Image (cartoon, rainbow, N blue to C red; front, side, top):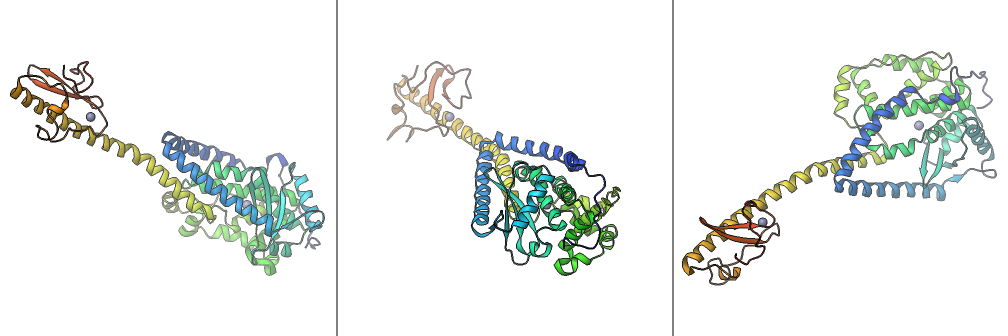
Length: 398
Ligand SMILES: [Zn+2]
Ligand SMILES: [Zn+2]
């Protein structure tokens, strides 16, 4: 595969300091603003923070298990194990200026042609599926493209951003657009690492057409599919997807042969409207859970203050009713005995005016004061008659 008959065509206009697309940086600003807003809302309601911490813990556990699975089941690539792939990896790391070399693993995955990058406890991991290695070969340009793409994710700190910016990533339209720009940027890292647009295209076409026929597909014809399929559902698929379509990625790679700009795709306007109602996110396993936790946390953040308010109002009403009851009991006692009470037991208890002493639902203490018009009872918590409340704090009458 490395000994392909076609001559290498280095990409035009890729410079190692500027592989990340401008639009990724633009979307980054929007997504940070959304994420900071949501995190602040969560922080304002303590319960939101509890959910966030709980959820962070679940994510951390899941990621820890994934990495443990790699360490235990996948093949760690080094000088002894798959040395040709190891050498290719070091070469690509050097070309992209990666100083801290991530751990590279090869994982058997039932025929899937794919690779991914992840991070755990401060260490970076790149994983290539074994069938993809079989298909591409350990030192091909195609492999350099794939490794370069994954190292692009690591260089751009996309795994950390996925966690910190999660609330923004699930925002409709903007979240998926930002995620798609990650992939487009990383394809540029890959093309730069491979230093050959033809080899990069072959790798991409193999992702689309499979290991047997993929490499012989006509890139230009596949890229035209992107320009031709501009209907409502394709537009909706594109707007809600976290990956650019493969035809779009091929079309972007083709443009690197000449340095031409790919015009922004025309999309069905209705698709934008519908996509606005669909949360971002994609096929990644954790995303559904993440959306749910964020929604639950937001609902809790909104519902808890409202619930507290309703409960407080109900308590104040019940307390006001009891203050009235106590006041009339005291009035009645005064009429009967012509003297003020020493303790509440004189009006409340077995055989007294009130069978039991009312208890404030908010935990307040009652105090009473005799005025010309009768008794006024106040509560230390619900002091409706605060202006009249005397200094007498407890049950003692003045
Ligand atoms: Zn990627
Ligand atoms: Zn009260």
